[in-house]
Each structure stands twice: as structure tokens, then as C-alpha cells.
Length: 67
Image 1 (cartoon, rainbow, N blue to C red):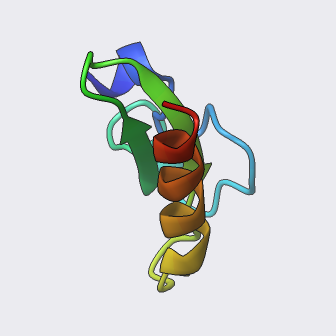
Image 2: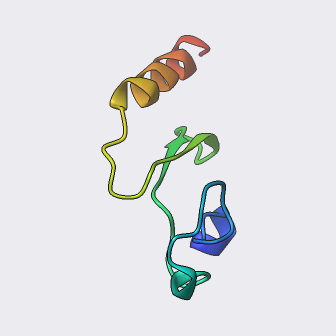
């Protein structure tokens, strides 16, 4: 699944602090998926950092407003 979504560690934006994990784990990502299963947004979170939910909530509200 991580390969399909393009979120494998070492293949996404940002630095690779742990080269031994390349191709083995996923970086922290957040996806906004609509009711039909279509990915409408994708965000990269920093490792071990708290991702600001305001960004996700705003995107979800914008998606709902478009319908």
C-alpha cells in the first residue's frame, strides 16, 4: 500500500536521516479521501512532529463546500 501511494521512506520530500529504513517503512502522511474513495489531498508530516490539524480541516471543509 505504501508503495502504491508513493510514501515510502527515502522516496518523498525531505531528508533521509535513517538510510537503513529506505524502502522499508512509510513516512508520516495524511490523506483526504472522498466518499468515492478518490484521494483529494495528501500532506507530508514531519517525523515525530504533531501535524497541525487546521490544514486538514480546512481542506475537508473546502471539499464539502464544492459539492
